[in-house]
Length: 294
Image 1 (cartoon, rainbow, N blue to C red):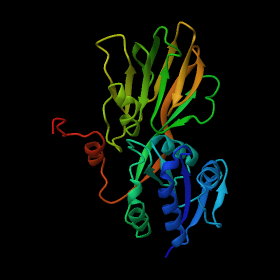
Image 2: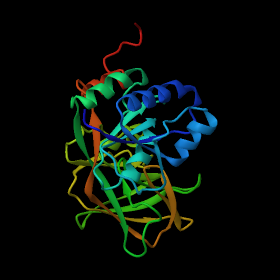
Image 3: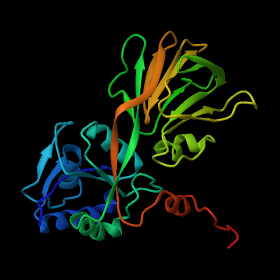
């Protein structure tokens, strides 16, 4: 049996799922897997949940780790954080859904034993997911300038809307008067963008979404672009500042900064088990075709 190295990351607020974590640890120990555990998750397991972690497990801090694959135990937010930590290292990520909906974290806790067996038998596929890169015309974004789901510009408070001038590959498109604008990948099309009326995109479709948030015009609609498009945003606001959000990580920005959003030079790899498909996920997660009267 080939020895595999797993990195284990997880949500530190879900004590009720401790049995699922314990089961996973036992399964990996039985197969003599090498185990790396993210430091905050390790402390949560050992101190809060009182789980016996294998003595051979190694605790990792920050982004300095390597593994054959990463297991994220939590919801989609935990998966996005794991993707940020993996960065451009091409480590496949398996998302175990310990939360609610879960489009990225789509493996159920009760399926963990079957999934681990499938991994060791090579019965899985890996999907390549596009990532967005954010840059400023002067200065740099705070922290990690990449997003798997979306980059959004948003008004800072509950006052007036913001004006967002948009250029696509250097050509002027329009100026949105809105509460914000989302530039999303196909992966992010079932997240924030979907909640404000954006289209659902199939992973691998090489597209980007341009979705306004509460636009102040009935003629404004979401727009789909090819993912080689370079989107430039210039924002003006009554209070001269606005928010920039990358997968939910927000920072303040001054209105004299031009933002450029383009395809990142790397992808995030998502591990999928046999029989999983995007369309099946839509049916089960969004209840497509279900009659609420039944």
